[in-house]
Length: 148
Image 1 (cartoon, rainbow, N blue to C red):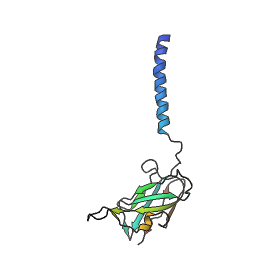
Image 2: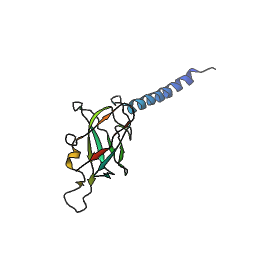
Image 3: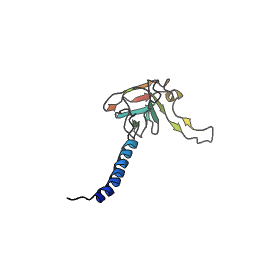
Image 4: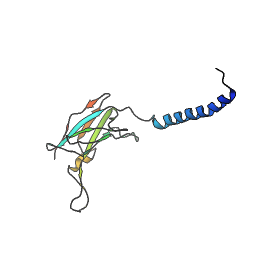
């Protein structure tokens, strides 16, 4: 097939533009600083009751890493949660963590603000007493059973 110089010159800018847009899209979507993550599922209860709406946060034990991620998940009606680091439900990087759990109730009396249904120690990594290890591969954690 014969291709004229004119048709080549018309195709080059559009081909370059399309290629450039694809490269730009690929560069903007990928984040090379992301650590690999692994699925993590768990369950939380307090005094034998599930904690729908509670927020579970995993705090890496290695506090020297200033860019460490803190995977988190919201507890469902059955007490179950899945962790999210970068995208919904993707999991957490492998490692050891301190775990916090918070469950806030809206202020219904017009007082000072929302109140927690849990003892304050569960909201702090150094006092919660909760720990977990995330391994490479799927992780089904032992339930976190919180006490007063």
